[in-house]
Length: 81
Image 1 (spheres, rainbow, N blue to C red):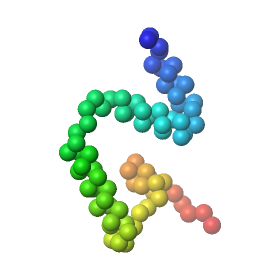
Image 2: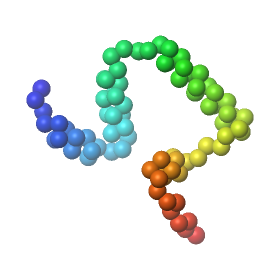
Image 3: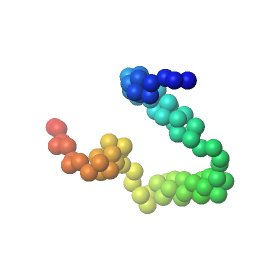
Image 4: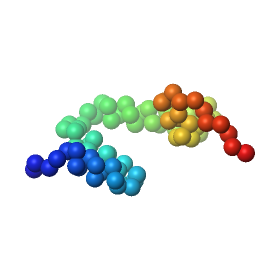
């Protein structure tokens, strides 16, 4: 296959967000040639711990928009009334 990666990327970016997310997940999965069972077990334990923290009220989840803003270091948008 000699397809142009720039053309493929442009086509992919034109897809709806859910289709781009699915494509991205498939591309990432294609890079994993072997499964690390220890990592799988560790992630399962971590997920269980985080769910318990949320269920018990020890932590309060925030919306993705707020998390993304914090990650990118952007100032908070002014609140609209």
